[in-house]
Length: 207
Image (cartoon, rainbow, N blue to C red):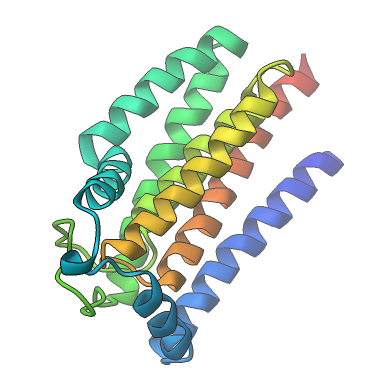
């Protein structure tokens, strides 16, 4: 077992443990005051907001949901296959699927209700914690940045930061997630991105 594996797996395990602990804190009501304050400050009031801004945030949220999300994942799998071979594509696709499954199972386990501060500006039927959008954004774009060739890596990291931040803010502003949902989803997605990066790095080390 290499030092890199121990480091990557330890960080991923710590992040997953943090997601569970944060979920327990959420269930105990310890994050309620902070969540309410953030959501009250950021949630979009339709009667006082620019329709173009609302549409922009809905567009960002749409990109990270359902069919659009998986189309992007498939396209990025093709890109990383071109960059570093089929193992990279399997890592990105597998990490995306597994993180989505983990997010769905944790939602059922914690069963947190969605915010009700404003009328939701995006249709949702599932529970709130952790955010599936935040999980997916962190998994897909962080792993893409780790797999990118050196000359493309600065752009990939910029894309990752932009998508993670915009995605998180859009979910809070549209009234469908609390800030702690975004934090939990981002940590969960980062854990799976780390595991995907390690899986690819292990092959390179063995080659």
